[in-house]
Length: 265
Image (cartoon, rainbow, N blue to C red; front, side, top):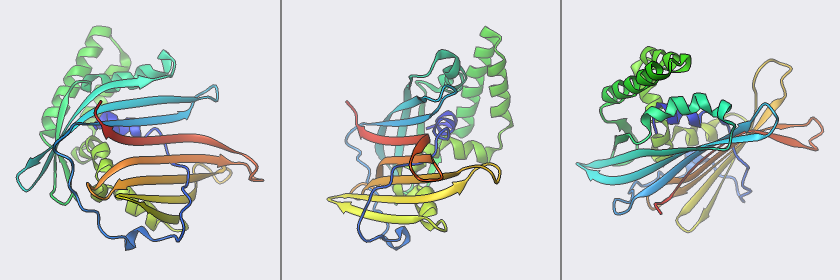
């Protein structure tokens, strides 16, 4: 849940639709209450899959350890990026690993409003100072052009963009702060449905977008969020994008992102 986590998450797009009777606008649904579990640690896995040059899907996963605690009227979320998992060839993963490695083991703290509507990074300047120093050290040790370019990228980012990237995965975890749920539901032409089962609410959207020139094939975009209404946390977010053949006989998965939270093992 860092700049690198945000960039890693952005590598994919959107999810398989879940059929649900009686489509309901998300805007009409009641607000989610927010009561994250402060009595137990959690594991948060952010996985990106995309088509590689050989046509096969390659995968990157960022694995975080999370702990919630009360802080004044709101909450504090403490997050540690534990590791990076990937099944891609070393040459493909080198750049991403270089971006993320400086923050592996780094504990980040977020302040979250009592209703979950706002997520703020604690000491953002300190984070970027530490991240930049580690990247520069990697560049000095290995004389690596990629590390130097990354350090320059971090230094050039506006503060607002740094904050957006640094809180991307944290905001995605909190339903009330997850703008994507409302934005996707409000998109023109999107099909929206909801389904309830116990304390879980599943929200699914299906849409079509054109990426690239006018001759580009349209992308069919499916998104799904499973929200625990007792805690206000998004237990799973799945986003997939597909290219569908003109006759509709076949479709190819282009990109996928899955964010999932579970009790720590």
